Length: 81
Image 1 (cartoon, rainbow, N blue to C red):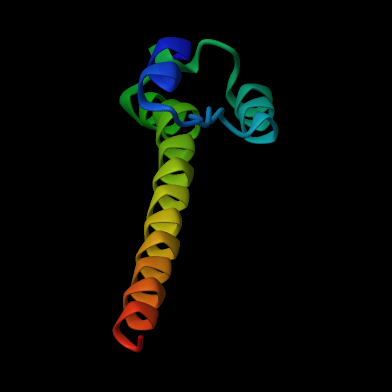
Image 2: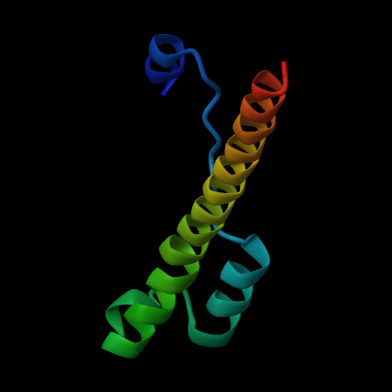
């Protein structure tokens, strides 16, 4: 990750599962629920993988919108000169 940040000159965010959700899942269903059934496997993947990925995607889209807005403002100010 450090090499990627250095190469592209940008900071990368790291997203982790919500530990309260993980703790609740483990308390309700046990530690090795991934092996119990397909439904438990889906629950495991939702909490451990999909939820952090969705947060990262939401942040990425929000940043794109901010950049697009700033670009639009810049273009409009350059036109008015």
